[in-house]
Image 1 (cartoon, rainbow, N blue to C red):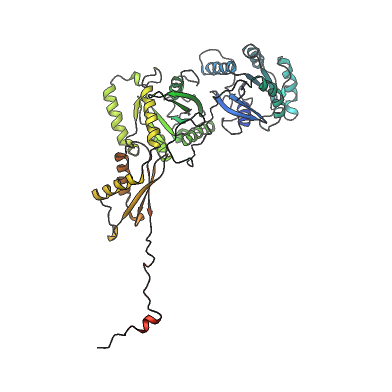
Image 2 (tube, rainbow, N blue to C red):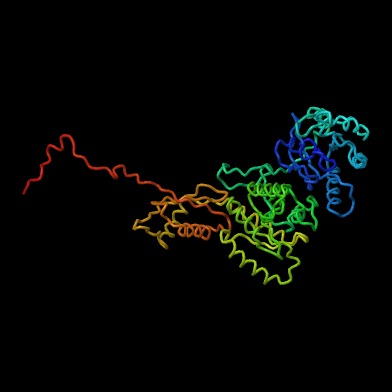
Length: 489
């Protein structure tokens, strides 16, 4: 990326709509309600032959205190300072407001390259607002319609000379939530790289501390936090290189998702979009961290999130936050482990880690648990080992014989990783009870050291390869003439 462009302006002027158009994907949530965006979202933008990083920011509010709006404003001002170019958007249909005048003065002081854009300029309704934008003293404004794609050629003309000036500066940090973990990758343990980092999604109920935890991991106040529940609205990803215990640096991308409440409580359209975006991040992630509140752990929604991650085939790590406020730590830890084993048997053996997002305590254990879960998720077992294991399992507990039919299991093989998938060739696979399949899955989990990871086991009918089976013997030709018929004696 040659430069970074921050899109700023008042709430509901169309910043997220323009962001989605520049990145070519509907990554940012868009709604008629003002103030949808609260965090800084980065994406890899493309405009004709220009490649750059674009930052979608929260709407600039006239607030400087510690309120939610004040914290959002400080985060946006930080984006202005870190960006190479600022695109200041106003609503041409509303015209220049006193707030726009104040922010125009702020932008002139904080960034040397400011481009003014009058959005929603299509038609006559935006003509007066476009002309009024000249009064801001930021040069000639661009007539823009982010919704309909008008004015993109003018924006290109403004950015082209700035791109040439910033060509020497390549920014590698351009997180994006739309990177799929393809199941058609080469079937071998995947090593995270800068091009394909380890993807981690942090999920949980509102106010569990997800954004605070990620800020502590990356070492900066990158995500908006506060005592209010439900601050994060859409899935935001950030890049970080994690120094491993063996000295090897692991590139990773962490997704911060919106807090998810029970479905019955989710009524507003915006919250439905937020939840949908968070569930999409879970499907794209490799490791899902379910963050619990130590005061109210294993609520119904926590269990549903963990079950969703298991059904999607993702490696799961359970992290219990706010451990610093717990007084009876040993008793509480024992209670948590018992509840985990009882409520989530499908994730038997998955790591359970206690952390404090506020103090940073336990983050090293969380890192080890994530790396361990990812390694098991990529585990491959040779066919020879699997067949020796299958022979021992069959000798220990032979499969049942429903209806007097004897079930023969011939051999097993691993067909995929991420998550580990196995096929057992068997006669009458449709008659094998689910309890026996669970017996085999538990044996795989214990004997090959794969705790917690989802395991897919398929029983497949190999078929009988005897070409003469069910064929009647026929006596024809010359041979039949020489066969003596039995006498009537």
